[in-house]
Length: 285
Length: 319
Image (tube, rainbow over all chains, first blue to last red; front, side, top):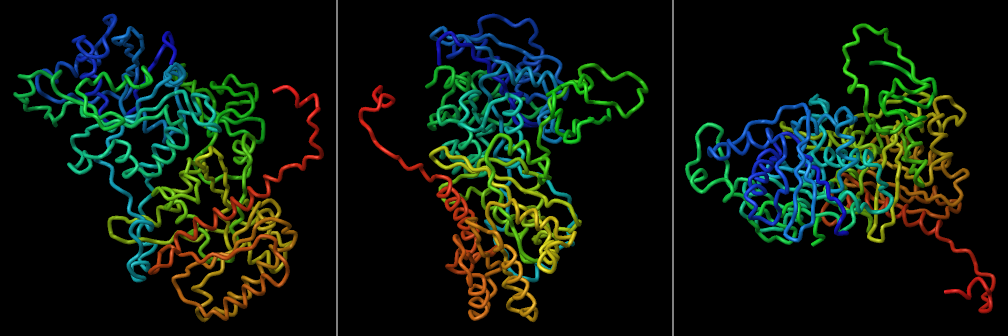
C-alpha cells in the first residue's frame, strides 16, 4: 500500500457483536499513546467512546448503543512509521445492520460510509452461533419422523451463513465493486469477538479455521470473493473477561482497562496491542 | 411512500430504479406517487435509499436481467413429474454448499436468491421438535414462469460460474407430455427452449411401489419430449430417493428407452438426501452439477484452428 494513501476503516457489527466494548478499549489504547497506533489529534466529540471508557474504568460492562446513527466519530491515527489513517466509528445500534438485510436498502449515511471506506471490520460473535443441523450433517433417522411433515408451521428464519453473505453482497453492491474478479478494495477483516468465550479447544485453532468450521458457507463465500491478501480473520477479546453492568470487577479496576484485552492475529499470535486489529492492512503485513 | 414506475420492467420500491439509477425515487422522471400527500412530516433524509436490485427470493423472468446482463448464465432445467424429489434435490444441494461442500473444484461463492434457497432448505433443517420435513409441493400456477434459484461458484483458477436452476411444479411436465401446446405446459416449454442442460428425475419410491407402471410411463414420456431438439445440451438422469431399492430390470427399461436414440451428453446419477452405507448419494448431487459444468465448459472452450503459422508475420514480430 502506498505510503500516502489514506486508510479509512469502517466497523460493521450487528447487535451484541462486541463493537461497543472494542470501540471503548481502542479509544483507551490510542489515547495512552503507547501502542502501535496513536491518535494524532483529539476529536471534538467523544461522547460515544467516553461512556464506554468510563464504564470500563468502573469495572463494568457498557450499555447498548442506541439504534439511530446520527454522527460518526472519526479518529485520525498514525502508526510508528508515521503512516496516517482514519478510523471511522459510526455511532449506530447493531439493529441497523439487521435492517440493511431485512429491508434491503441503505440510507445516505451508510452509503457515504461505505463509499469512503477502503477497509471493513466485520464483527461476528461466533461462540453464540449454533451450527445448523440439517439433512447434510445429521441425516434422517427413520421414516416415522418424516410423517410429522407439515406439523411445524414455524416461519423460515434466515441462517447466520445466509445473513452474513447477503449483508456482504449488499455492501459490495453499494460500494460498486465488481465481484467478477476477486475483490481487492475494500479489504475485509472478519473479527471474531469474545474470543475468550469460545471453548478451550477452539481457542487453540486459527481464527480462520474456526470461522470455516462454524460458518462454512460464509467462509467459502469470502474466500471466493476476496483476494487472498485482502482478507483476514482475527480473534478479539476486548475485555478478556465478562463484565457485569452492575457489580464492578475490582481486579479490572485495579489494573485498568488498558491492561485487559488481546487479539489473535491472522497467524494465531496473541497480541495485547488492540490497535493491531487495524494494523495488518495498513502496513500490508 | 408508495409509488410506481411507468416502465414495465421496473419495480422501484423493491429493487430500486432500473432505468435512471435514481437513489431518490421522487426525482425520477418515470416515477409517480400513487399516494395522496397527507402530512408532509417525512424527513428529507428518508427519501434517499440505495435499493438492492435483487430481492433474495427465487427469480422471476425479469429478475434474471440483473444477473444475465453482466454474466453468462447456465440455466439448468430441473424436470420430472410431481413429487419426484426435484425441490428436495435442490434443497439438499444448497445444504451441502452451506456446509462447505464443493462442486468438483468449484466453491460456493454466494447467490442472489439466498432467501429462496433458505426457504426450501428450511424444511431440511432440524427444528426444536426434532422433526425434519421434505419441502412442500411446488404449486402449479398455469402460465407462470417457474421460480428460479441462483448459485455462484468459483474454482481456484478464478473461473466463475453463474448457475440458475428452475424450481417448477411437476404438473407442468404432466401437461407437457400429454399435449405440448397445452396452456398449462407453457412453463415446461419455456424450460425446454431456454435451458442449457437438463436433469430429469426418476422417482425410485414410485418405481418400487404400486404406481410403477404409471411412473415408468411418465418418466419415459418426459424424456421423449426433452430429447426433441436437445442438440448438444447435457441430459442427466437422476435416480432420486435411491436409498429405496428398485428392480434392476425397471432401471434398464427406463435407461434403455432414453438411450434408444443417440444423446450426445448423457449420464445417470443415483441420489438421495441420505447416504446409505458406502453409497455416496449426497455426493452424487454435487457430481451431477459438476458434470454439467464440465460438459458445458468443454463446449465453450473450442479454440479456433490456427490456419497458418508464419514466423515472418509482422503482427507477431513485436514481443
